[in-house]
Image 1: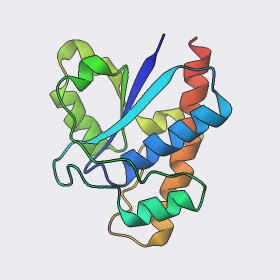
Image 2 (image 1 turned 45 degrees about the vertical axis):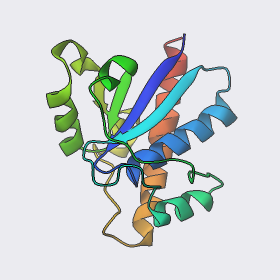
Image 3 (image 1 turned 180 degrees about the vertical axis):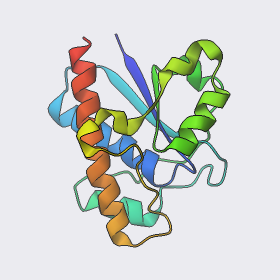
Image 4 (image 1 turned 30 degrees about the vertical axis):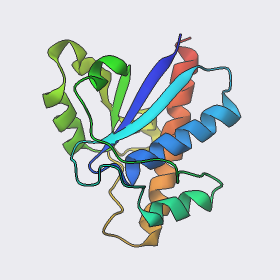
Length: 157
């Protein structure tokens, strides 16, 4: 059974493409037996068709993760049928997704950091207006949550 995961942030150029790329990298290296498809999207149409932020790409590349092929898109109504989980990077985007979701699909919307409970945080902070360390922090949080997500998917069969 193929499971489908959608990572969601505001503009789909920093956090959610990072989560998609890190998750795919971990899936390939650490859980090649799991059949999972990953994608990312934004709740707002600020950057449709754009590559991820250059600072995001550089930070990921420093860790051996290439996300240069990704392009921003917006969440669509069909995503609530297509994806098993829609994982928001923060509370604002979580609320936006819940409002968009058909009532019978709202249970598919969760916060990504639920998969990293030891962090004691609920949100992946937006690094867009900060310095370079913000992108490194996002990578650390996303990697931990991606590992937790992989473990949860493996445990569920």
